[in-house]
Length: 273
Length: 278
Picture (spheres, rainbow over the protein chains, first blue to last red):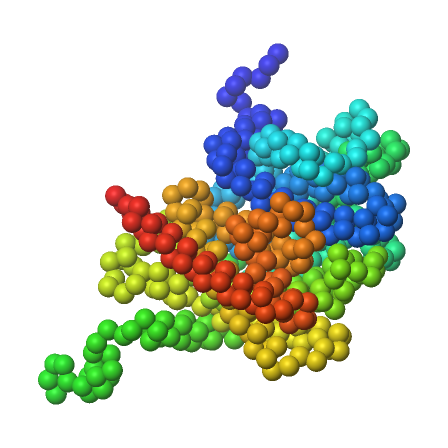
């Protein structure tokens, strides 16, 4: 028996929320396209730099050929937009403008509202990314080892990466309940993420100790892992292990968030009185 | 005392409309004094600038960890490019970006009409209303990085060389101003301009590396359409002695042209601007 349409269910809420996010992005197509084009600049810069270095050394650097580097940075753009979540500094605005009251008076946790909204937009970004990737493929001639298992693994890893980064950003946003000067912490976060996630360069090109630190942090599971999965640099065992790591990170940071959230809204109440 | 008495009117100095230069100076001074009230922002900005510079230095270190030369550029020369990038970026964020944000807000809220109806030149007014004085930290840091690069190269920079470098920096500042004003003017009615500013920021990042290492299509776009090459790479090449007087002349020419084009586009933009309330 199906539940009547008027009844609330978490699954139905998620579906509706994601459709709303999808609609918002598809309505502003030019904006979405410009955003993708804007995001393309950064990987093209890195690609140009590393291709120059690799070519000077006979077409390969630390085991990465120019073709692999091209593949890496083309997939980079899609992973980058899947990484977008609710910005931590935007919580300050929510608190300052009293928007929190609106959220707190609803029975459902604002997390679900934000998560579904961002998730829905990802489908539009994927649609816009395809022609961009095709164009870049013509120019940079990437080498990708196509396999069904890689594509399936990539789709899961892409959403897994989104989940990890979304909860991390959400947890970070809680800082705003304690201070209005969170910007310094967000700055440090963004800089460390740039270096330790594979966003600037694949971690193999970093000194060994950087990769060692990265192994203990969630960053690379949001960025380098999905990319490596699609372009065929991982075997099926590594892909499964990586998805497991994403689940673990999402769950453990999610638990911390739940504990912090309770204290945060208690503080928020104190501000309002 | 009676109305119009010089003692009331500031000794007669304010009794007639100021010329464009005085007007710009007054606006900038007021903006700077407003910002100077917020001392803590200095430390916040210093921290952010330091972090940003550190990231740039790490990126260069990572590259030269793998190679000795990047497309013919030594690490010290690349340091000079980074220095100019930070320096011009500091100018951009101090003088240009805050004004462009007010302009965007005016367009969105329909208050640009108040500016357009003022008797003074509208382009001048929208370009000098705001100033983020603490971002000048980047100008100082950038200059420091250039000096460090020159020391690394054991460069014997002459007085003439320094003047030439100064001229290219002024040209660079004029060029980035022209790019930003043009982009925002074109976007008046086309797109969500807030996102456009993010994209421009992304494009500016391309200047962090010498344009000569980019593929031809990107290099020509950054030279002709969005002439960041002349704003950042050329000053760095002048100060490190990689190029000579010809490029200095070219930078001056491009800066003049960019200013003229942005002026023409601004005139066109406000002629076609119908206000948000109309």
